[in-house]
Image (cartoon, rainbow, N blue to C red; front, side, top):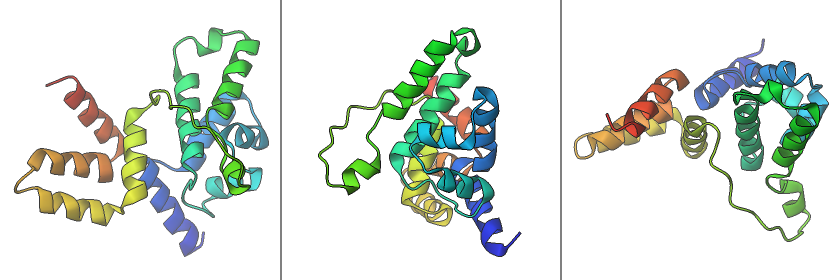
Length: 180
């Protein structure tokens, strides 16, 4: 593996909590889809999905694609997904694909109407993705250090949600949202 691939895979773990190939592979296996079919649902090209899985690329650049990934992971992770009739599963996959306009429509200059997103299936993954899209781990850590003396709770949130492991971030989120 080249240094670029290693770096990209390291960045994926930093930004998404794990390798994208693992996330995509779970969906491919769970839904019995080809990479091209998964790419179509997410709004990616099949080659881009392959590049993300192989580590040739590190980042999902399009926020709509990341949103669809989170929605898809949430849908198939719901209790009862396996009991749904195949037609209903297919309908839900189509809904996820249509949830937001692709950037292709915007790039072609077509007007688009963006509906409000539903509550993300995994708010921790959404928060981590947002923080990691706006700043590097080093920048988030630096911001946390600057905030620590006056705003320790915000500093902790930045550290845990922005630079921590997904497992730790989920535990932190559960603790904060439960009011304990």
